[in-house]
Length: 531
Image 1: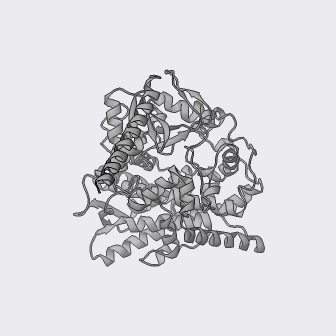
Image 2 (image 1 turned 90 degrees about the vertical axis):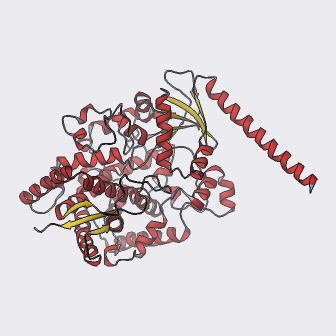
């Protein structure tokens, strides 16, 4: 036993010396080139988890510390990768837009052999394949295409109102948890407007099969799922041996069968529908082209700066939009657009409940325009200027992602330093910290839609407001998400007064197992408005 203990402690000591030596080498690597070193990011995240510190809280603590030390760029080792965290808006612009050719990819990771769907998603592709698919898919997200699917958004919005009314009747009072209603709304929109499928989400209180499969796709940053995710990111070989995949096989099979059945039905019956499956089928046949008149100034700037990323380049395209590719990128709506959209809707309702003057002004705008125009249409929605301001402030206060990243695709000299970021190394941008920085947003913890009024919006540096990222690698589904969310908000404020209830958490607490989700539901008091 004595010999065993000696060997055990000797092994522990050697490991400690090894990791300390590695940490010293990492520190020397950055600091010898003038970049401050902030330690091992993976280790810091695990320590935070042990202490009960969530992702958003961790990002906020890191950002505030760096800001107080007047550091604009720092180095760390994250998941075995040398990474720069950047806080400077000018450098953020360089990475996301100006020097995009050096940062055309997300941080590098390998897809696993069981990830048939994930491997063909736009977010998983790199280089020429990503450029080719992005070019094909971009025309499906123009204003005209969103307008085609808008009636489905509106129908889901009406179902949401009925669901909330029923929930209020069942609870014998005004207090309800909006989590369920917004979950069903988001799932229903994705099912109908993307997949051409009836989700049956609003047909029953319990989650439908479509809902259950969709929920299983959502990534959680806690417990066993986080451990599994870390293994997949740090050691794909071991993950493959253990049979890991980003999505359970049951989920992959469900969506593959449902969407391919829809595709084959259309092909066999020469049937066309106004949904994103149809748009992707048309994109596969090169029937869709980007109309630059529908792009805003920043989108056009991003295209120019990307050196032609969106100009129809076909390099490496292969079979990216075969049936499996269409399944993958339809499912991407679920992966990227369910949790984020549901959370955004919850936080908007929460902000309106706590800011009655804002809510009254918004209800006035929605009611006036609906009275003049009748049915809620895409054109009517776009007239709602104050709704746009409220949504922009919600996105500032509660961005869908606490941070974003980029992978270096060719060696890059960081402006203002002697540091060369090598190909394969990474960049991290702390969005939540930027959005709550008093240098850019006076009284950042105050919910103030006037920041985004026509008079004030132009004063905001667009590289400290990044709810959907920026540049060619921004969120391609931004227009879809904004239209979907606006519909739900307009229906809610037009039909209900929203107030805090006894169960409303003030201040808000974020879930520790998700990037930005409320902890313990979203209980609010709703009072039906009679029209």
